Image (cartoon, rainbow, N blue to C red; front, side, top):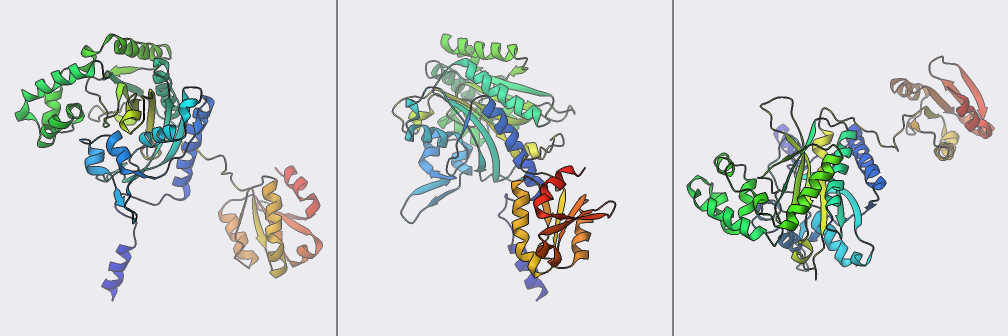
Length: 432
């Protein structure tokens, strides 16, 4: 029987790669979101929340086949009605779907949105990497101006620095547009064909479907081949060169350090022109820089997902789980969380009946409390107040319920005073 109980307890667990977020960790996530939201709002961005479920085709056509996300990591399902749906593996394609669906192209351009929520990818779980994780995204849709690329990067850095990150730099590259990328991909393909024997099986397959993905390979032998691969910047057309040069000039003007990384393409197929990652330089030489955020320009994604015309756009995704778990994270507290100044104690049926009315009075006055309404004895409730180091207690018993009063007790000095309900708020304001 003991073995059966053990087996049963193992089954009651969250799915692999997911976890419950509660207590202080929950507040850490919420605090980061509020900080990121604050930065976004001051730059003129508005909120949007897209569905967790989307049509799988949105990601298959947007992110692209031949990517790990679509081929290996996407969670899909068939509904009873026959719809082929997917848990969103990223925010960008759903945002652009919403842009098209709601006719946002008729608004003054660009439109600026931020969003926050869970993302789902069937990846190998490890420290800081989950199958359900949280991202904060900011996107500018409807303009191809280089200043927007720089603005998005600067906003990402501001959020991360105000959350406690230090030693940040930007890895950046330009992979060109449809005018010049074809010549680059042709040269890249020819290069890899000369080194087929050194490519992994996966990368040889990518050569047939999407050669750019090979630059993103984590296979050690492929990485050696990539070191001498042709760089996309050498093949940029005049317009793309100008755009990239302007982005770098804006970053320099803002004092943002950057490193041109010729192998940076990001893991999604929809990027064009600017691609970037914001990385934390590690203190130890043997530790690789840690990517905290990334993004780029995706001027052709609208057509890829079925839109009638291109929508120039640029955005950034910030991985929240990795930030909250970092030793430098400031553990930003949500504004809604305030340390209780009062512990509310009720005694007896008559007092319990009226207790919620008093708590509502305190709430409307923005006075946070702690309480254990389910407990009955004075000693047990006072013990909790002392354990939580709450400076004052309000005691509401049968006599106080009849007299429309409460007892305000100083938990430090143990002195107490009876106060009429009509004067309670004024009395609490006068407390130190």
